[in-house]
Length: 67
Image 1: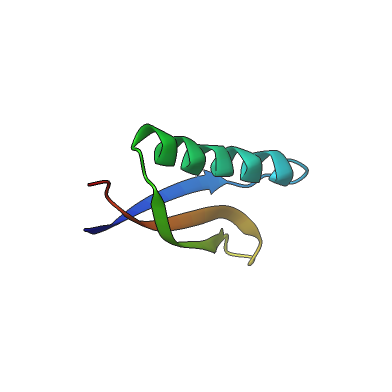
Image 2: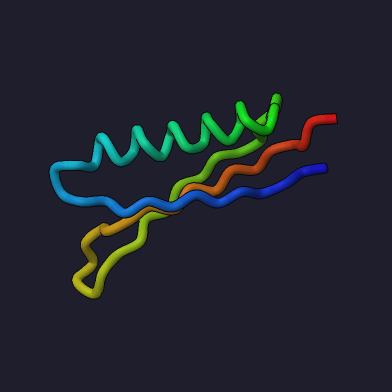
């Protein structure tokens, strides 16, 4: 069965690289801890404040549950 998992992270100026690496680690840890062998799709979308500046990121992962 296909499943969807959503991850989110705030982004701060001058810390973006570390925050994206942390988000990658969250997804990798989730896949390992849940024995996910097949990830179908990964998609990112940014969140913005009222001025249009990017303040966060939402990552959606579609995967198949292990048998």
